[in-house]
Length: 298
Ligand SMILES: Cc1cc2nc3c(=O)[nH]c(=O)nc-3n(C[C@H](O)[C@H](O)[C@H](O)COP(=O)(O)OP(=O)(O)OC[C@H]3O[C@@H](n4cnc5c(N)ncnc54)[C@H](O)[C@@H]3O)c2cc1C
Image (tube, rainbow, N blue to C red; front, side, top):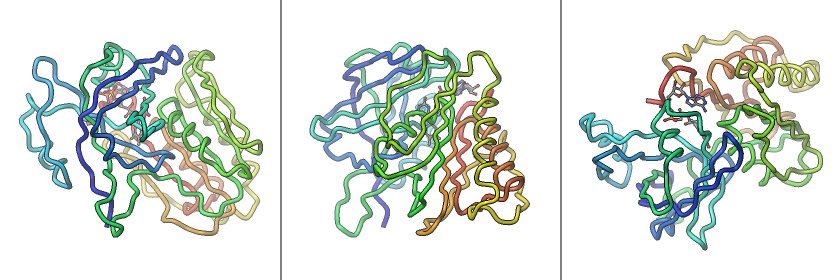
């Protein structure tokens, strides 16, 4: 049985400008005593207030999403997906690192004006009621016994990549490519000595191009190794209509494990190159193309 999802009422405890593009919002509240965190790339939904209305209550439990969808537009709060950057259960505090990308979406708009004490709601897994429930929820990073890893993503994936890096076994070996808007957006993060972390500043270049170049170079180093076999055809994913979310089932034995996330057009190109071009086994790569230039999340 999967972990139970519920709505948590929280309030803003701190707003910290980390870099020109990243704002850390620390949320707190007694409800977080019931929040279940698995770390890594754990995602949650943020329920954003509607100006002049606030929040429409949603039921706890599995039907929260259906209830949300059924609401009239005027009282259906915007939902957006974010990563738990860190959770401190004793303090009942949860950090989310938002990319501030201007006044173009409700989440980015909210983070540019949110204040300490302001109310917010999140939807995430609750601590299990019984041992039969899995104490997990909404995290995808699963390298099994892979002895080499690749993590690649844009700024929206940086919080997940940083949380994963901090949780890796010290013996892990691999490469990490994180594309951020500017040089000033590099974040401090600790990683095992055998993992090379490269922050790639876009500095005005087209989104994803510089990271894609680096991942292609990485792919050329595994191309003739045990991680690659025959190249395979891929069903096309229309990233303007569908979410590109291609996650391998858990596998114990993989020579390489790659995790790639961010803007869907860029992730689609990398999927095509790695699987169809280089022959990387799909069982070794998690592809998550979840936001799209010019399109709101829902
Ligand atoms: C599993 C998962 C985890 C995520 N974790 C994080 C996280 O920890 N931090 C984080 O900042 N984001 C994260 N995201 C991405 C975030 O959900 C999207 O960026 C979301 O679209 C932001 O919502 P919004 O209301 O600001 O913009 P929307 O209303 O969704 O979009 C409005 C406009 O803004 C554009 N836009 C959206 N995001 C960006 C961006 N980053 N840069 C430039 N333009 C953009 C859209 O293309 C659209 O044109 C995650 C997404 C997923 C699926």
